[in-house]
Amino acid sequence: MPGAQFGPRQVEAADVNRGRVEAHYTKVLRRLLGAHALAEKLTAEGYRRTAATISDPEIRRIAHKNLAEEQRHAALVYGLLAQLGVSEESADRASLVLRRAPSFEAARCFAEQAQGELGLLMGSISLDMTGLIMIGVNYRDSSYAPHARAADEILEEEADHDEFGTGALRAAVERVGADAVSAALRQWLPRAVNFFGPPGSGFTFDCLRYGLKQKDNDELAGLFLSVLERRLNQAGLEMPRLSKTYPHTII
Ligand SMILES: [Fe+2]
Ligand SMILES: [Fe+2]
Image (cartoon, rainbow, N blue to C red):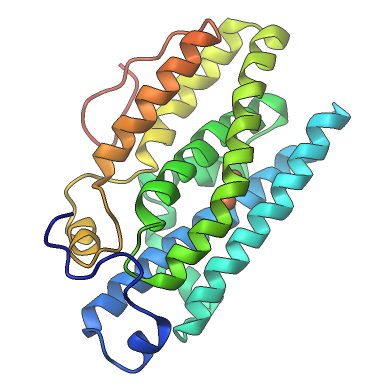
């Protein structure tokens, strides 16, 4: 954003640890990394869950591959927290309230309830496709250089997960029919959009001000919806209608 206090990749771990940035920057950064780490961890959990319920060997193989990659992403981001003196346990403790928020419903449901190929597909749309946008737009240009470098590493694999999701969408329509996929989408789409978080929050304002995010949550959510609508239409599906304000619901 114009007027952000730090440009992309300007701050290193040593700057934070030696107090060369203000204490509030560190606080906001820790919270943001904690949320990112938890999202990667719950996504990995979801892939583990769904992989165990999938009979098709090729899809199961991909679920296991994605599981290993999501575990690596989680380890990478928890590693960034460790560099700042925050353990995985204390990061997760600090995210306890967030875990129950509407913005984490998709990740929670994927980790705790998703089943079978349709569950895998909904997790991929709700977490990989959205994650790819968050990481590609916001974190790759983070002022915190270690987060931006982690984003570079994660992006390539997320692009793969996203491609898998697109193919899986068409396959699911052929296999279980448009009505079943539409019903699942009506359940998952609000969760997916809410994953971007509420727009205009004080926390996001701080992230934008410090250059830890580049765009507000509603802009990213809008981008996600426009890409998804095109994909759904290509697969012969209609986009469910959503309420305008966060937390979004089906109308
Ligand atoms: Fe990931
Ligand atoms: Fe992913």
